[in-house]
Image (spheres, rainbow, N blue to C red):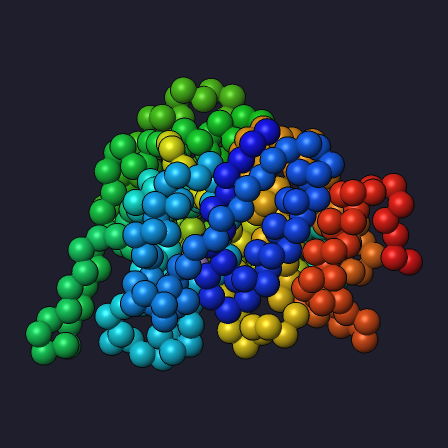
Length: 360
Ligand code: IPM
Ligand code: MN
């Protein structure tokens, strides 16, 4: 298969982890006779530095003319500590999601058997956890009208959802549940929010088309507790933009490190693949950032194009690296932890030679 892949490394550790994903994709291309062409463009703080724009037109154009997008990370402390900055790195990512219509953000959360002791949660609680979060990504409070009063003392962010916005992601969540454990949990705040009541109504109606899938509901405050109290009760979680953002970071604790969580953001036309972690500025260029989230995002990219065998091989390589403790310091407290690029090398070598790769 021939794929044009736009690479948006972004800020902080974004470039170094994305490089490992590219390394792994190149190994796949070689092994399976595919042709992947990578073209890079700036986004986020990096793009503000270069073009005074977190999403330059040329970057957006490259994304639109590519088959898929590999995204690194976004954010820089100089903006985090300056709330009045008008141009912000995050605007680049939000605009990209909106312009490309990437309304569904899919975030798998899994407890790896070999990492059960890395989570601060008890092993018997997390063992066997396998959740997919469907987070709505182009609506809600992130994109509603914003207002700051002239005296600067009052601010508002509007949260708005339409039936159509809810339906299109709900269909994806139910379809995914059909090939999993056939359960969808809608996370909302329907006891307080009108938008949540609309979500419940629309999703309840739509569920009738999926009689083989069980639908249940949780208020987001309770869901936040249940996710760490009993994560195994979940199969597919469906939720709005802001709740999904919060809940997915929380859920990453189950796997032992946020550095493991990959995601796919898909719409009707475009698809982007990115780790859920941020730019981790303190770690930039130190070779300590975990590239696995980015590498697994590359596996999700391949799955998107139905290259299942290829994606599976990447996942096997990742599991093997975890098993052999070929990991960065977020998961490895021993003296011999491995650098970002060494983890990438190991997984790429495994792909080229699955039987022989062993660093023990
Ligand atoms: C994420 C991030 C983004 C979000 C930020 C960087 C705008 O936290 O992808 O989860 O809030 O969606
Ligand atoms: Mn987030």
